Length: 254
Length: 330
Image 1 (cartoon, each protein chain N blue to C red):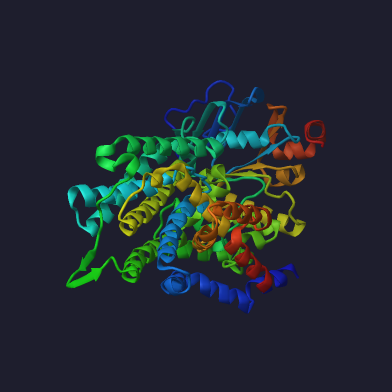
Image 2 (cartoon, rainbow over the protein chains, first blue to last red):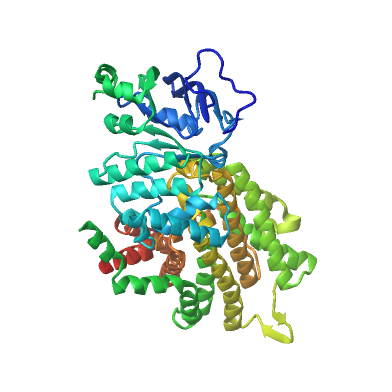
């Protein structure tokens, strides 16, 4: 676990001693609309952190800003001891920051295998290592293994989501940002996904998890941030939030 | 149960057939093109289909696969034609060297125009490519000492082509056709390899969603610039072959109508498919060939066919056939 020489964490920062990801005073605008107003958060190594809140609270904007995908933004993003605030998106990925966006997650014209190769290409492996990595995915995700030659768009929503997560895992990121992974997916697959997230955590990968399904998010996460109207309104341990419904009812009820 | 249905979908014999066709697409197209001079009404038409099919294929690389609509590809077709033509006519370079020079000139120009235009997106990208290509047109128009200006570039007749001990009569239409075919097939093979390589998938990822492609580690600007330059190289090769074929480079080669030609041919045939551009070029040139005999207003018929295709076959003729076959075998 690397101790960062020049961590910016000082006054009343997030309750993580040596964070892998540290976001400070994040602001984002869509045109004139100031949608993120000073969000600061941190995720430690091997930690699952949930980001919850109502629709439109700014959860997606937060992770998109962390990936550098919102053009009009300010604030600092430190990841794995490096300041990424001004770096382009693909470099953030290259540093080990994986991202599974919401909605259409896969390239529709390509087969499952081709979609997976896309996730590997940036890692620049040899042909043999590539085949090995895909074989490992086929073992870990039998549903995908059976369908490697199939066009990805012909799979169910849940399988497409699994493909997107598998693709993000292929490059061995230190952390994955997951935007609504359980949305529109059948319950059996949601359980499978929760197991996968806990597996990833055991393997040392950190997760920042956006979820509409607050119960699920709090059950598998260590800590949680609650976002409302572009501001952080609460942070604490997930167990506490799960036990005490007042905050959940106030900020997360639809 | 959904699993069984999905598994059945990838199994049928029809899909095997189309996968085989996919794997053998370059040899199949080569056979079809080799037979072309005996199928279409004239040798000249066959050569045109060959050259403009390659031109449209180069354009499709950028438009169909990387999703960037350029209105300036005449610049690369023309740069290839003028590059080869000037090398032949002004400097007495051999035919093969002239082709290499033409392709190189087109490639450098594509790198330049690409670097300037990929900063913008959508319609703005199209407008920047159009403006820069028109700039190239006016420069060529004014530089009469080099390009012959309005009258076009003349004096580049290649009559004999020496390949080792062989001396081929390039003035014979059939010989000329097959010499050009060799270059077209070589280019098609290279493009097919490129599309099957991970870079092909990366281009499609960029086309579908730029920010998602960036989020899985792709430098989107770099991929766009490479796609743009490769596309320009292919269109430049088509231009050099056109110069050799016509023995003259008309100034129209660089005019924006030539850019429009690529767009129409690709949309007619089917963008984002491998064979579509050739089908589109063949349909377009066939209509021109047939109708221009009895009316000077043949473009009216091309226009009608184009509108009908856009309205009723939005995937283009080949794209629709391919999609229909896939559905039927599913």
